[in-house]
Length: 392
Image (tube, rainbow, N blue to C red; front, side, top):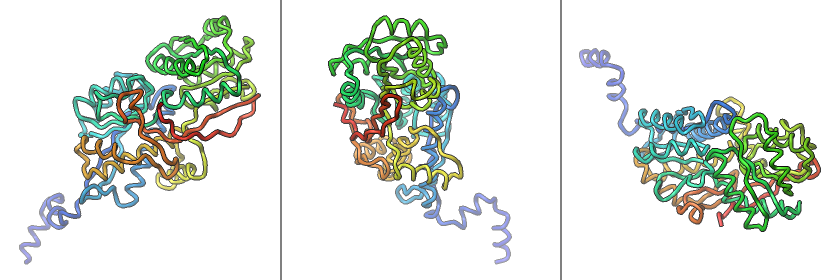
């Protein structure tokens, strides 16, 4: 007995652990990859995305891990900065693949997703992204899902509200002249046109600081309204300020995503916005605020400030449910099948839908209830809740 104890004492620690711990008790580790812009003017979006994955992981780990088959899997999050470029996202995806990671949340921007999808196809990665590109998802990418609809889903009901409030007959839609701008602006123009509103597009070079020529072109078109589409909040604020200074008094919309508070700050306040309408991905109520409270409690830090964080939490939660239902952390096709079969419902955001068939040709787009924002004569109105967009 003494001899056997002495031998056991000198075994390497890893072998010793395997000797005394039953195989059934061994835990697995699920490495969840996040491809997110963490630098530059769009970093707020990427920080929100990363925070959602960290919260979903912390929630599962606090319960002893995610139940996957016979194992309780600890979730760890590995985030790589995409730098908001196609090249950066491709490099980030390759980095994650080299670590054996097969399940990815993100990216958010259209250029990023364009760079990531070829890597995803080659390596059979399961990706849940949130680009507003016209080809964000499609039948040719069966393992790529959409975390939330773009303007193809929610632009129509917002335009109907704006048209009724402001009697809009014509609009100029403004966006950067790259895929992140042109894809969204063209969809928004189509939505206006379907509502009987004459729409035209104006583009500017991303990184522009002097918008005077753009403002002149807009004023020459004499539109009833201007829509800032996917223009970054900082750019949008400057454009609003210069439009108002040049005498434009019509309503201004933003059907390319949230960011109203920052736009107002840059423009000079809500009085400058005056009459404004926009898409808000999540209505903040007590159930949604609980997500922020859970983040503080589990991660001992302040949650990301961007409201996309809450939407991404719902996405991360449904993804982990799919992994548990599939009973595997390796077979991405099986996880995708489980994800498609899940009902769209979140304890905070409510019931949603799987959509995307009509616009993308594949029913792999998550749609949750959203908010329609209005500012009337400089006064912010309560958000109007709208049911999950159907994409029709």
